[in-house]
Amino acid sequence: MGILEVSNLYKDYGKKLALKNINLSFDLGQIVGLYGPNGSGKTTFLKIIAGLLRPSKGKVILDGREIGVYTKSIVAYLPDRNILPLWMKVRDARNFYKDFFDFDEARFKSLLEFFELREELNLRELSKGDLEKILLSLTLSRKAKVYLLDEPLGGMDPSTRDKVITSILRSYHEESLMIIATHLIGEIENITERTIFIHNGELVLDDNTEKIREEKGVSINELFKKMF
Ligand SMILES: Nc1ncnc2c1ncn2[C@@H]1O[C@H](COP(=O)(O)OP(=O)(O)OP(=O)(O)O)[C@@H](O)[C@H]1O
Image (cartoon, rainbow, N blue to C red; front, side, top):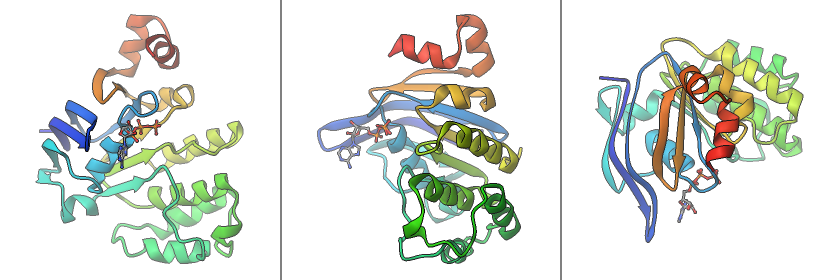
């Protein structure tokens, strides 16, 4: 049994069926790229695993347990939009995250230094990209079993994206599973062992990244453009 087992998962928002019969199994030690056109269900999928949304049907088992208090304690989730109150300074946000028993302050400090940001900064005064770096640093500073990163490269300029990828790789540890949802496939595909495509809430591709590239003779980014 993998660390994360998803079976017959459905999610509807009223009339809108956002996920249809998703079956997936994940092991520790994987970085997974989760891709799909706008509205395909990526955020919905991650939110269900993070325990922020309930499935309409189906089962999600994380580290042997149903989604609940325990599973939330082992998941570090980076949402696709800011969740921190803007009155905070970076230091306040760090103190807020210290409530997670697995928060590694030294790691946070080193990520801040890496991004050339300081604890005295006011969140309200940060650029979109810098605020995203803070949120990502807080998320990666948890020694979680499962990391769910929803569009970690969103507001970043191209050279900052490289830094973000470096920070992700530096923070990643083999005893964890990391799922990264992004539209910037070309930037991420080289660090992922596994590639998943969803379209209209359905799983359409799930395989080893290198195997797909060899068999199809194109990059994951090119394959995505061909398919959608
Ligand atoms: N709260 C909601 N109420 C109604 N429909 C919703 C809600 N949240 C998402 N949806 C719909 O569910 C579908 C899946 O949305 P979701 O945000 O999971 O997609 P996504 O793949 O993350 O999209 P994007 O790439 O644009 O971020 C979309 O059609 C969206 O409009």
